[in-house]
Image (cartoon, rainbow, N blue to C red; front, side, top):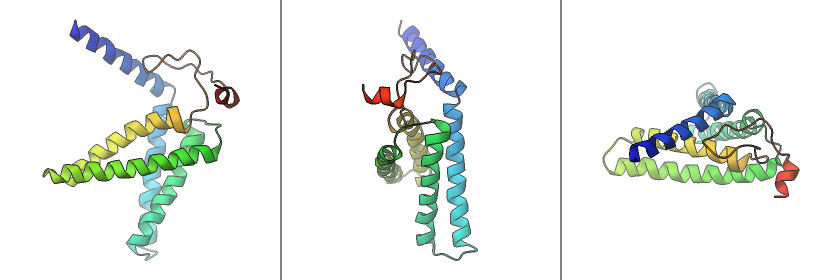
Length: 169
């Protein structure tokens, strides 16, 4: 009985994940994340090495460049959001702060129990990636409700309710 319930729950979760991947959300999300990382590292490298900018200045500049790229690419390319940019950007800013605090807590917490900080960083990256995807899709870049979508176990249809209709809910 328990095995059947767990199996059904896993199957429902897997169908939902496949639906996101099939519709391109997850693949685009991960591609934009990879591009954001490349921009962060590339900008840092260019500023610090050939540009000879001090690391403590180059690092936040590169991070901010990556952050701005990530916001606009996720907004337009991944989630095709028509929401007002300033509203989404405020939500995005809140999430950035939460991610920063969570990452710091996880990395330092793992290190405090004698495990490598690098393991903590990997765990924090996986955790923030998972909740970022969900929060980007359902809170930050949400443009409306998806008709015929009954939750993570079903695949969303391609028809979205307009932003104005969603704002009236």
